[in-house]
Length: 388
Ligand code: GLU
Image (cartoon, rainbow, N blue to C red; front, side):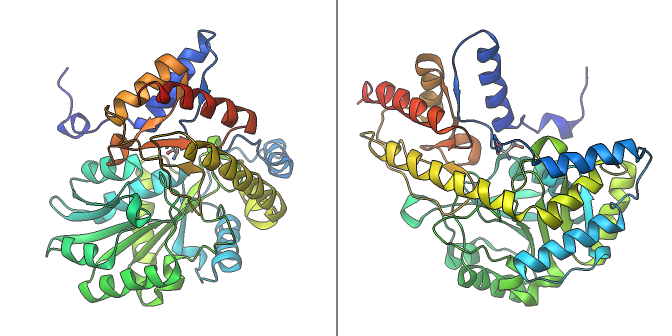
């Protein structure tokens, strides 16, 4: 078969591939501890599910407006005001099939062949591939654990060329959990405003921050950039709704209108009966979000402590998301080889740093039970200490 050049450039999602591999081993009866995919292990809160069932009973099963119902977009706007103190109108919001699709659609409507998109590494696997799909040129800025995996304004400035169209920011970060504070974001905002660079700000983990760290939305930190920013968020991580596939973009109306055209030719909208459930999530689930956040913080502390007791490993303490990104450069193997070894010999599944543009690290998702975290890290310690 002669396939399109477009698809031949793209690799499968490394996180989903690693998760599928772990699932396959589990289906063979092997007791795999799975630290791969980044998704809350909690069930979706009952009130959200009830709202969905009610919508089905009311036969809300026909086409919905392409950008999502007005009521849902108003609920999202209210939520952004409540938690980020930023003002968006319903017409500046589009509901998409997961945050991933919001990012895809944004890049498709903004990026032309050869446009440069700056991506600080370690980056979430799909940023890079989606820029390629849009025929853009990913310009990767490496960061490491010495600087808490944060890009500096100097690094950013150096990477800018006349072809730079967009910067992708992701705070809290997948895969490192690093969070930019308000001043850091404001500094990037100033540079982008001066150089006329757009910002895609992926804030999908905004509700999951620890040690009292307060998430600041990029638009709040850099208000002058509001007309050049595409804010991405969704229901998946905050409300344990990964399988519902609900995300959104909030941006200037002219960008949202173009995404709407694209979406009208692709998926039309997300399923109609999911929308009332998402309204419940955005309007009235703060208590449930806080309970999950607290549990993630406890798990982070347990995993962080256990990891740093393994000789040869060092790990930053992240302020957000639900990942740890330990440095394994002391071992005489690549992180890909270490991930393979951990899966084959210790039956612990992790994702190698190579997938995130950061060889020498492993991503460990601690969105699993305390029991699994303790047992998984015990197995990692045993396997790695043999390599020393
Ligand atoms: N974002 C999650 C992760 O990194 C879900 C899988 C994916 O879409 O990549 O594991």
